[in-house]
Length: 178
Image 1 (tube, rainbow, N blue to C red):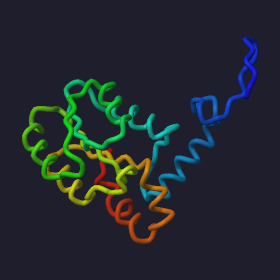
Image 2 (image 1 turned 135 degrees about the vertical axis):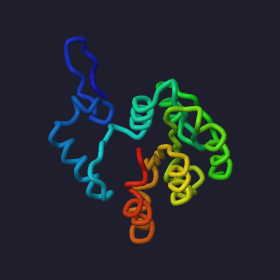
Image 3 (image 1 turned 45 degrees about the vertical axis):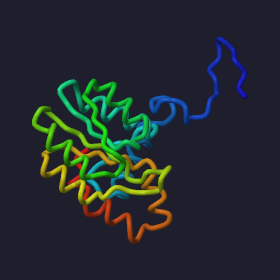
């Protein structure tokens, strides 16, 4: 445990510190490039944590005139991002895409932007959303789709990389808007 002295910097592990102080910008840029190559996308933006990603992306891309619709089992960081944005929040029952479709049909026209947020793998339940159906729905409703991959990329690459990962990342990156 580091000693606390008022005139000395604490030698804390890097995980709890900001990117600016814990990693050089070139290394972070290289990491982002590697993530983009791994996912088969043109570019990637890496954050210090999944929690920070959800809060920052939702909190900065959306505003008071926007709507966010999310799964009932979404992580708390998604709800915190919605609060930061000041957006209206609607929740649909877990993985109930018919209920989501009903919310989109009923509310889409009232908002400048609509974001649907799901998780790629619900780690507490072990189930996944039907991403192909979500992409069809987001196109029909002219809204954005954000898939929180915090719990899905590593398990899929370790266990099912040949069958599952290409379905999600190689066929659909341009369809997943956010």
